[in-house]
Image (cartoon, rainbow, N blue to C red; front, side, top):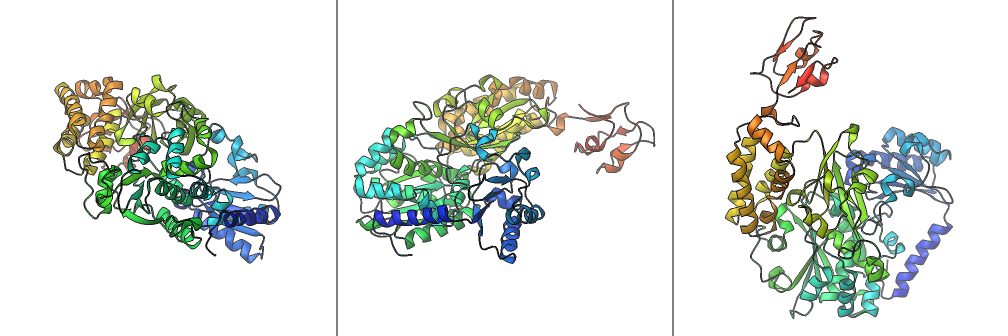
Length: 614
């Protein structure tokens, strides 16, 4: 491909692809090849259909990879798009089903309803999972081939950059982003335009734009999905941001545990350079901008700006005191702006559609949409993008389908290890940055973990605190030592050795760590503990006073007993790994509590519901 130097040439590429798509009678087969799809077995599915098409000599069949379409619970997903016909979406596809889909549908023209969602042949927009969603950051994920830049250009890709370079001054770009009200989607919710305005006036021989793709929250995978499904959206936005603040160099700091994202970013950067959309004299202007990838080792603390900068510089990722802020003195002492993946994924659309368009959905103080990774005890796990102001109830029940097995909803944790749990009394809270803080949680990067009646909230708090203890950089004493002491107390409580005095100490420690830690990791680490103590005080009391775990999760506080329903079939004793169950055939068995591992296998295998967990 030759380098593009004018908007006309960019438009010609789009028009050529449009004509090809409209005039083509080709069948397009889209296979979800994000990490979720690949881990579910999408690669052999893709290979099966590709090989079958080649063997049959069907040159009119294009088998294309795409990112995550959002419905992770249904992976692997295959979409068959035939000209003039309704797209058919197949779910839970394996190699055997893929072969059948090719023979019956792609080759034979007869779709297979039983492999679709509920046997429906309607479009995805008619599925409950999508009805209340608004896709902006995820607009191209699962739709375009992320390894083909022309598909991105076909979807108006790089036209935002062209508009900025040829029609707007840097100050006008910043004013537009400010006017849109776009707030950082990485957790803090700070105004993106305001952040850019802080860096723009600073004079330096070099400035930097950094994309923070070090997504570290347990259960969060929003940024990964964007990088895998629509990498050019991030590259274009970084170039726009670079123009706005006067930066000519960008870095994408991405965790090494995201190999698919890294691979597609490398492909996208190479393609953009080949077309002259990265590098020198972009679109025939005097603006130069290049991007490099830096791999992180998966340190949660590197989600904090100054720790991330230290890591890129080659040092251990540790936070430093602010000021100076990165906008004044950041990477290698130069003015630097850091935005996360989802924030950047909105930028080009704001440039093309305007501030009022972006403010047309969402809330007054939190315009636009937010992507959530919906997981835990929920029927429809996956990626959800909804307008700010959508209620938690709508996300969990209307989109997520509620808890599996008819279990009762108990709480949802937003904000990961930095957030807090939200209970049924606040399910009708409209989701935005300020509302979540007001009810004791936070937006965070967008993880949303649902818990049902079988979850012990103290065990949940211990899980998140265990994570932050491991991820603390160790620089400041409150975080380094305080979180360990809190974790020790939670260990005592869940093992039946806690006291009421421990609850007082736990709360005092949490408040002190919040107010004295150096960075956001330490300041927010106690949130899951304080939140669960506030909403589920009765569970803490039960653990320390009654020595019982109401949810039956904490092994030290539960016993398995065999009731009179036992028929003496011996299945439980034969299955017990500790040989703790004894008894004669056709007689009631007993469990030796001194050797019982509390594994629950006996309860799982019993056919007579004779095993009771107390």
